[in-house]
Image (tube, rainbow, N blue to C red; front, side):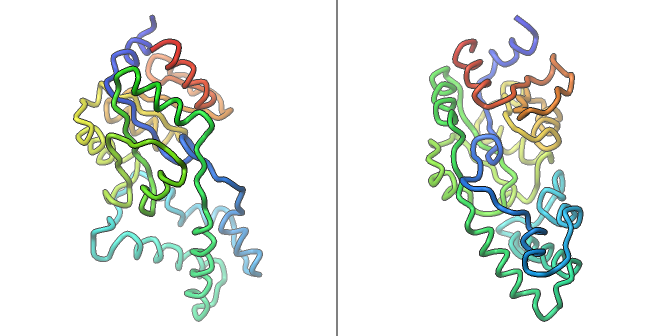
Length: 237
């Protein structure tokens, strides 16, 4: 048995990322910059990438309970993005509302094997956690996706930090009551999920999604799909 396999076998909990790992869009949506182009403005993917929430990965942010709160911080970022995309000041609030209405059409759909995988993890005697960079209340999304209950749920908007910031990893470990070195962290984003888990002392599991290996076989378990990880847990753990 390899060193990594022994570490996974010794885990007491498995923590999952949410979007891109356990769930996906039920339909394809255009990016914000494309949506603005469709309204007749001139935006750009690089401009959107400077203001979208992922641009602040690893940072502290206002939390839901802060004043000003997380939503105010988000809207301030999007207003700046709209102005730089050519939206006149007098139209910014109207176009922001259109963007928010567009975002509200998001419907999460569980990846095909997600529920079965969580069930197998529980059958193997492990606790199950969720740790996500997410901007809205996540529990309605969990219910809509049909995911089973988690033993701990940690969300960036509620905590005021975004992965790979250590606060989120420390919090989910504390809520689970499990030491970091006994936790496997499963995610699809190298910079947020894998790097954050490594720094926190957890055992990362990277869902590559067709991307090339990063070449750390003794430290990071890599699977092309969540289904591949499901089969590994079912047959080997």
